[in-house]
Length: 68
Image 1: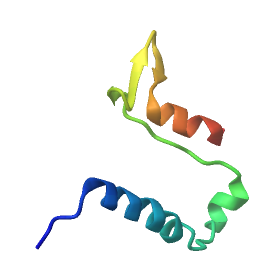
Image 2 (image 1 turned 30 degrees about the vertical axis):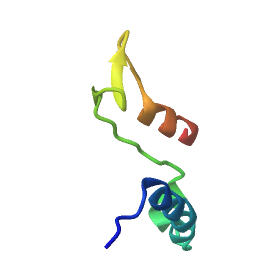
Image 3 (image 1 turned 90 degrees about the vertical axis):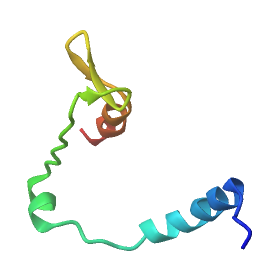
Image 4 (image 1 turned 120 degrees about the horizontal axis):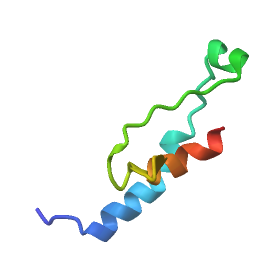
């Protein structure tokens, strides 16, 4: 059996993932009522998150920043 190319796999994921993530999931009442979303990071995994001059930086920090 011929193995699919990387491009075909990436294309399939690019098309399929948005549909799987669009399922309506209700926000838990406790979260909705409190208005607070807490995000925990572990600053020991560069480049995802790490400390620079005592402040957390990295991809995960950039991803979580719009939440506040």
